Length: 87
Image 1 (cartoon, one colour):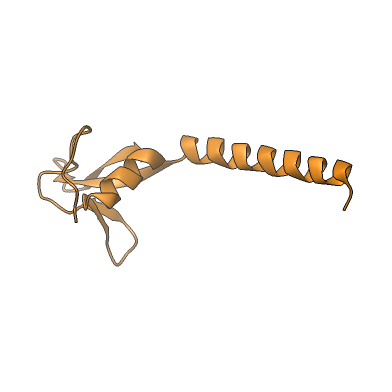
Image 2 (cartoon, rainbow, N blue to C red):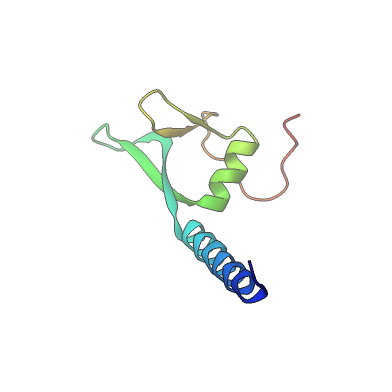
């Protein structure tokens, strides 16, 4: 493979990586709040991909058998900021 082909491949890989990062940053996830409204339906909230990673890392979210995300604790999601390490 010559030098020009390597530069083109490197540039294409970089552009693809940046595009995937931007796409992931925009994606949101619906999470049950653990509460219900006056009609008995579960309330949900939208969180970002970054917040999803933080919450699952520190044990704040679990995935139910039906695929829905819900807070592990009864009080809902943890607030942003410093959190204790789970290990």
